[in-house]
Image 1: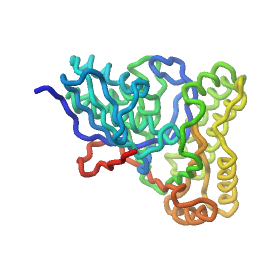
Image 2: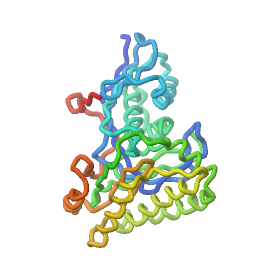
Image 3: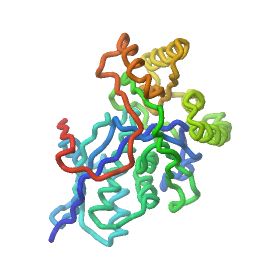
Amino acid sequence: MNTKSSDWMRAYANIAFIKYWGKKDEALLLPQNNSLSLTLDAFYTDTKVEFSKDLMADELWINGQKQEAHALKKVQQILDIARELGQVTEYAKVSSYNAVPTAAGLASSASGLAALTAAVDDALGLHLSKQELSCLARRGSGSACRSIFGGFVEWQQGTDDSDSYAIPIDEANWDIGMIFVIVHDGKKDISSTEGMRRAVETSPFYNAWKSSCEKDLHEIKKAIKQRNLERVGQIAEHSALKMHSLNFSAQPPFNYWSPESIQVMNCVKDLRKAGYVAYFTMDAGPNVKIICKASEMDIIYDKLLSNYSPDQLVKALPGPGVQKVNEDQVMIIED
């Protein structure tokens, strides 16, 4: 038999409520601080992996399109480690269908590399634990370690390759939802990796940011346990603003916001004035995510329609961890 093939594996994107912004080890992708995220059901990646002696090089196919060699870098980090663990030498064909716009601050790398990790484990019969899967996913993209799990997840920064992984905190099976407002779905000008590096090296406020993350993490975990969505939202919004402030204070300064991003933030503040529980968060991109009650999501969505088209708005509920899906469930998206 010349091939070792996986089933289709699906992982969902996660959005950080307590941000991580900066690495203390770029080779191992160890973060400067713990972070906390919510896995969501709206955006996901389906991936299948085939190791074959007939292949002359690793291949990556996304939405039916073969990718250039430079796009393989993060994928090969995971493939190479898995080959060593499984004691195989074959090259791999990775087929992914991505229901997340790439490099737009919508966590495409998190879902993509978490799905890849699970598929590689399945293809090679490694039988890795969830903790080991999380560690391996991190080697491709830091935030991917969180998408191994569903609900609220904490990524523990750790000190080395073996103890930097995510752990589940809360299933989030209560009244919480999120609305994505997509103001731009193109690639960002400054990658997350470059943005983090610049903030760590040049922002005069970086150490204050790190120390504030510890307090934020403690407070938000307490609020999650109490199911106090208003407090969760307050902490998450403040964490996002502090993260982006690092970028404004870097040298040279940069930011991921657009005028449309600010318009959405102001819209969220108006929703709060009107009595809704609504808070925003943003990652390395201009798109805004609105944290709200699941029970009020349809009402807030309808109000947003006065300023945004339906294709700019995506409703999401807490999502599950990485899982196997049948081939007929895979959404075939051709670029």
